[in-house]
Structures are given as C-alpha cells and as structure tokens.
Image 1 (cartoon, rainbow, N blue to C red):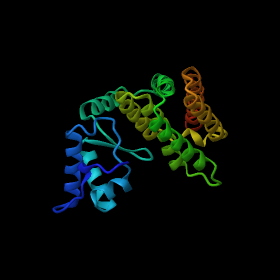
Image 2 (cartoon, rainbow, N blue to C red):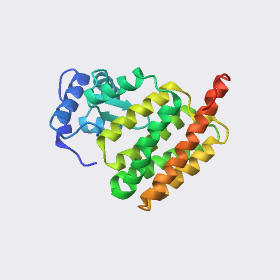
Image 3 (cartoon, one colour):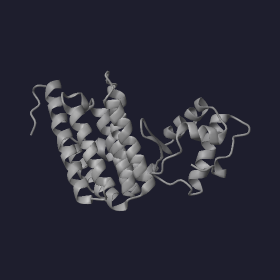
Length: 245
C-alpha cells in the first residue's frame, strides 16, 4: 500500500490517544468509510511511526467507542456505529437458533460469491486467494490449532464478501461471524469436516476466479449446507437431547 500522508508519524503527546485521534481524522475525512479495512497492524504502525503495543491500545479504545470492529484473523474495520450496533443488538435479542443463523449465511454468502465472480476486482480477489492459501496451509498442519483455523476460515469468507463490493453486506457478515464464533466451537473439529471444508473452499475459489457466478453460488451453497450439518451434529454431541430438524 502506498504511503498515505494522512497516516503521518505521531509526534508528541499520549501516543495511544494520538493514534486514536489520527485514525478518527482519516475516518472523518471520508478516506475510510464503514466496512473499510485499516492497513495491517505492522504496516499501520510503520506509517504512524509508533510501536505496535501502543497501536493495539488505541484500537482497543476505538473498539470500545464503537468506531472500529476488530475481527481476529481478518483485520480491523471501520464500524458504522448505528448500523452495526443495531444489527448486533437485533440478532442477539432475537436469540436466533442454529438453523436461522445458517439460513442467514446462505442469504449473505451465496449472492456474495456470485457477485465476487462477476466483479472480478483483481485486488480483492488477490486477498481472497491469500486468505484461501492461509486457511489451506493451516489445515494441513500435523497438529491443528482450532482457534486459528476458525479465525482463518472466517477471514476467507469475509474476503469473498468484500470482493462482492457491498459494504453493508460486509458489516452484516462480520456481525454474523462474530455471533457464530461466540456461540459455538468450530465445526471443523467434526471428523472429516476439515478435509471436506478444504475441498469446498477450493471449488468456491476456482469458480470465483473463473468468473462463473452460477458455479460460485452453487459451490457456496454446498459448503454452507455441509457446515450446517456439521454444526447440528456437533450440537447433538454436546447435548444428546437436541434433535436436528
């Protein structure tokens, strides 16, 4: 990413406060808008001429204010305080069950995969490829880091939604992923699911890169249906009294 003069080095004062102020200045100047991702931590710290611990402190403060969303494994995103807060509140207040959450995934991710294939945005597709490579590499490790895999899996799907080119869709997907991650352990632990997910991801990626929206949508549906079945199986294992509908 080219050096943006707005991200000039911090000079004096409480460093974390100044970092937060600088980020807010960029957001207010419309250089960053709701749903946009901030530069990666290492890059942003270099731009601002500050240490990463101070940057993290500033980002935590901005998150507490509802100005950014921090999605582990995905990055830091500019929040729409009203939209994001209202959406999260509505979803949590409705106490949606597992089937409804996966229904929402279908509503969001199927068109997103198709739009990503149609748009063909080279930079955003490159980010999808990198996210795919990261989750694939991690999934092939001899000893699985399930938390890391969960984060990388969420990042892969979020990169696809970003490539769809709809900022509201990005915010909605981010909130949905947070609820799924907070509410249950990763379905990748279900026997055979990790390998199946890896194959699904490859089919989705291939269809998107081929610019085939029909195949991308179909591959996304197959993947989410498999994840739904794994989630229901996982829930029954945790609570034998729960029956899949």
